[in-house]
Image (cartoon, rainbow, N blue to C red; front, top):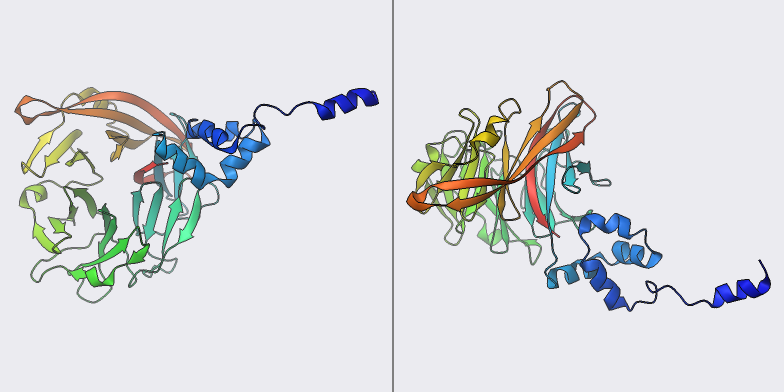
Length: 368
């Protein structure tokens, strides 16, 4: 190549991408679906730098433009090595392990708030309760330590209401039937010990391990142990029992528009509970979908993008390669109070784990 041609190449104008003003480049990236960021990073060093180095500015701009997305995260337990790991959905048909994140503590509480996942307590390798707490920033998949809990806790239930996460469980004292409420302020990122309260005398609440579950409806936290259901009202630290809710052994449920939904595996039906009307019902219109899941195992429910999403394992239990079946359902309340569901999307989320079996611990809806 002659020196003249080389000189002309050096003096050629920069590409339109590299010459874009900073705010214009951020606006362009903010409108790109998050799942495409790895490919966009290959377009130019400029875009790669913005995606990797400016996540807070980029995601703040996404939010202001109304481009924030709901992303499905799933905590999966490998039964062989007993590790709980975080996976996320890529596109519509794939779950991938998030690299760089530590294994989550067993028997702790996990709550999604906006773009963050909060993790509280649990047990260590020696099966002793721990007081550690941290959050996962799902925009960058990095871990931020949080102030330790007021005391070690495991087998807890947690729910988010009005800027606070309420973590309910035992404080490790001999009286395990009295539950303690530890309150974490997500804005101040601190614990509020003055709001820590105990369940009222005479209210015997059993162990939350294995069969405990909690949801938030109408500014109250509904929870269950093995036998009964309870309601905690945070403003007055008020505890009550709910006999109607206790009439069903609900678990692995979620809330959509202040109605509880869960899958009854014995009858293979999708049930709902309305706390305002204090009544139970069965979702109509999803019978054909559920008939396909008879051999797949327990179904987890999650409110995802304002809809009801169902997740359950699929495949032979000793098969190394496994899949998670997923369906998104739009819900409609009709005359007479019946609730009908319409399947919007059904797919298999391909997943391979080292080992022969796994459990879905918890699905989460994260906004990024």
